[in-house]
Length: 288
Image (cartoon, rainbow, N blue to C red; front, side):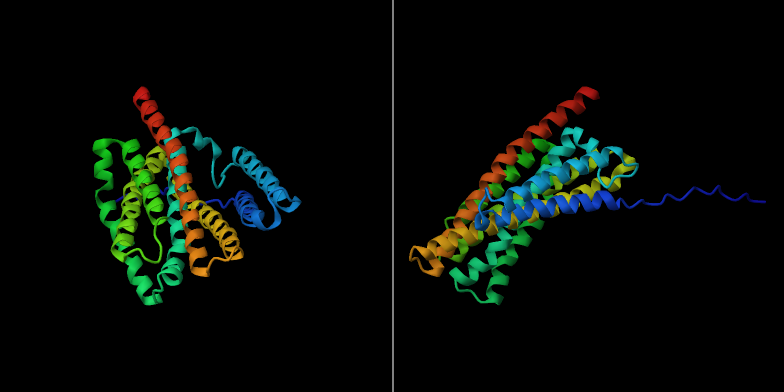
């Protein structure tokens, strides 16, 4: 008579409501400060209070994560260089991508006078370029190393943003498309390697937390990209029209400044990401 297989206790996921609330509140306070800074003044009580609140809430989030039995995100994981670098890399990649997404369609319609249908068709090759490069990104990373692959990818994202900053109403679409494909190639090269760095760094029993960390990094990076570039765009556009520039000229100038600032952020943070990936690789070899 066959014996019944032993029953394995079913693990139930524990929802960390306090940790989730602290993370959302801290991110909201930070984004509010960035968005409202130009209008209210960076030294105003409201803006400095928002930044102070974000700092306090994130500190409470870390304290909660260190003490909770099942935190939404364990801060101790960031002691792993590859995981920290991968998270920063994902965040800054989406920062650069959403800096583009926020203004790209507006630029094509307001400056290039494209219709909504033309704008959609003009942007579509961006996704195709990302998918084409993603297919080979991990293979190249295995040969050249994570740090080189990610460094090249982030450099291409920054280069694409800087090239797009040179575009105006007279720029031919084929040139504009080439600029978009440079950025798409960078994103397709960096993202799979960064995702692998996070997943490979997280202990097996915390794989779900690694997946959640990727999602959080993407969302926070995207929100920061929109907030920063949107703020730059509104301030520069208002200044341009206030000095007598036409709306089209002022918008193109504001878009260019937003792209340049986003490229600078990608390059600066990208250097830290590459350093972290190299440190993680050396630590892994040393522990092998």
